[in-house]
Length: 299
Image 1 (cartoon, rainbow, N blue to C red):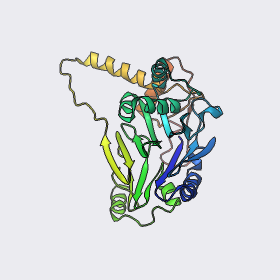
Image 2 (cartoon, one colour):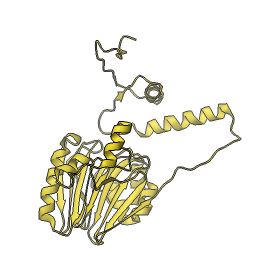
Image 3 (tube, helix red, strand yellow):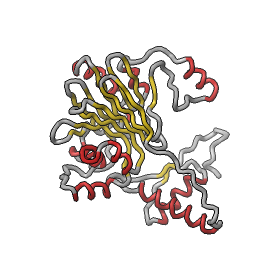
Image 4 (cartoon, rainbow, N blue to C red):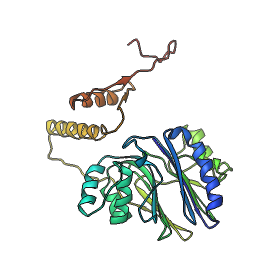
């Protein structure tokens, strides 16, 4: 978990720096390992880092291209970044770190935003500022695992990992009636709403492009609706197991220890089974609440 933030606008970088620093303060708990900002004439990016890949200073964000024209702030994990890195290296790209962030940055510069998102497999939200095109790209993963919030004003756009960070920078203060109704009805606010007026979430599997005061939202992926009526039950079970173990294996790569948090349900128990099947030494943590009727530690 990291925290990303940024402001792009017509009022210049000085005021934007103040707003981004306020957002980063609100995002501190998301990234205790490092903090950074980078400014261009009309854009400021900020990042709070929780180090997962390449724990060295080479993974510092915002990460800027050698030309200085492109910058990225990234939250998440790209599971196939090693394969993409080899592809980029075969095209002559040289790397300074062992991070998935640098793969995204170089991938954007070589392939463009559409080809980049079509290649990546992971859970993520990231922002790319292209200073040459004066364009901002906000991208969220296929299922919306990682949050990405934004608000557009007459002067520009502000984005962050949380609504609280947007609020800390003074970009929202009026409660949304629709958001409040949803919270009272469901106990949560749906992905299309926010608790504040004018604040929105980038939808899952979407790219928001902001350029010259205009925004364009496009969906880059949809779940394929396909039914294989010929497959029998045993084959379906075997294929489900193969896909599940492969999905767990992708998530075991890290430069820090990997643990498992168990809810006690079938799904989390299966995750630990898959880790063991893959030869991993799993560490699981169980939290109990003595005296609570829902405590299951004695079971």
